[in-house]
Image (cartoon, rainbow, N blue to C red; front, side):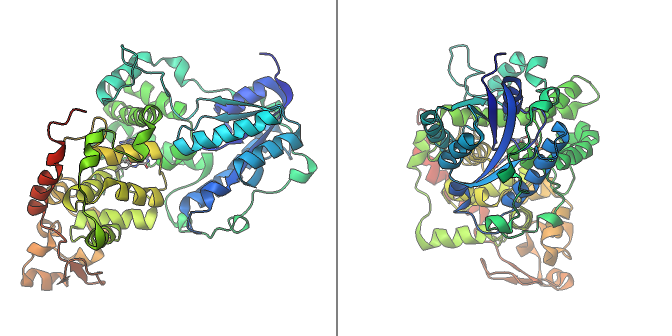
Length: 499
Ligand SMILES: Cc1cc2nc3c(=O)[nH]c(=O)nc-3n(C[C@H](O)[C@H](O)[C@H](O)COP(=O)(O)OP(=O)(O)OC[C@H]3O[C@@H](n4cnc5c(N)ncnc54)[C@H](O)[C@@H]3O)c2cc1C
């Protein structure tokens, strides 16, 4: 490959690792000296609360990138450059200071990121610097997997089949960054600073250090090593929130502290072995991730509207009553223990089990009649692994407004979901200790407990929506059977709609 110039700048965004990295590989292949930068983007950070687990996760992961670059290059000063500010100002400024003729980055197809990159590209071009971008975050992006008629898939199973038909070892192979690591250049004198602390960027520590969520590439490898022996059981175990079934790698995939190629390769190879049925199921989940990314890429309107336009005619609850119901849902005081325990999980840890994401999303939309966008926004604020494409896909699936969503008349029953997936109430007891003394059969619907059973459990039932104390729990906000009827009537506007 021809050298594009002596100096290149790699701009890290959702790819915080130094191995198997598309943009870094291409920069090293085509430039004699390569620098790496991460920008704490003022436009992204400004609206966030001052304590945000994602910001802390990023800050710690950058320390790992910094150390990784030094180790890879063998230069003590070939670490990461970290800047703060607006991308369209800071990236061109740094490129000029370094004398870079090209900036290399990996694709980010979220609408705001595309708009940002267009601004950065224009500013770089004005300064005579090229911006080269690459696929890195998914196995197949944009229009790489299309139907036979050349359009985007909107149903998962045929997409998955086409995805699997297209897959071969090439798409899963790692970019051998280490082969060219000697091109990593020492940082110029003025840039030899350590990665800024949280305080340096105006943030406060969170409870991240108390969570079983190790950061950086080492953290991802630790979680992966823990998951690999469990992968065979994933198909069954992933449904039960009290069981250690999933990989917990979502946040690492979100920030690219692990390569999707590494994970998909492991799953694909393991799926080929008959004794590993869970691997095919796990691979399928990774394909869902690609699926939702290509949906967002082809249909960016989903970020604000229903994928199926007819669903935007639904009249959701509004006003003070809606606000009251929504606050009770956010704070986990709906009176439905599985829903409330799940909300406690997201509020305390930033994680929520996939089964529970489906249950609480369905409950908000189809039991409380609240617009799915409210729930989507709350998840976006709380989830460590928040990703616009997957979060939007999940919410539109639950509200039936999305591509390949569940039909609108399928409404999860929060009690039977609880009995089926947390039968012994182990998950509920972990997050709602005031219910711990109830017998298993009553823990899913505490309002059915009689005075004797409540007294034996040391539990007081309080009015619906009340903030519970250490020994009390609210009565249900709504009656599920009545809510179901109301929802079917609410959704009648979409009946027969052509989508
Ligand atoms: C309402 C709702 C909102 C969601 N919001 C997000 C989100 O913001 N970010 C996010 O990554 N996932 C989201 N999901 C999908 C899924 O719940 C999480 O990916 C999963 O729970 C993360 O845990 P894990 O890493 O242990 O997953 P595992 O079960 O180990 O799965 C491995 C990886 O596959 C991908 N994956 C798994 N299931 C899905 C899925 N249904 N859709 C897309 N990708 C999937 C994720 O990258 C995940 O990390 C959402 C699902 C729902 C129903």
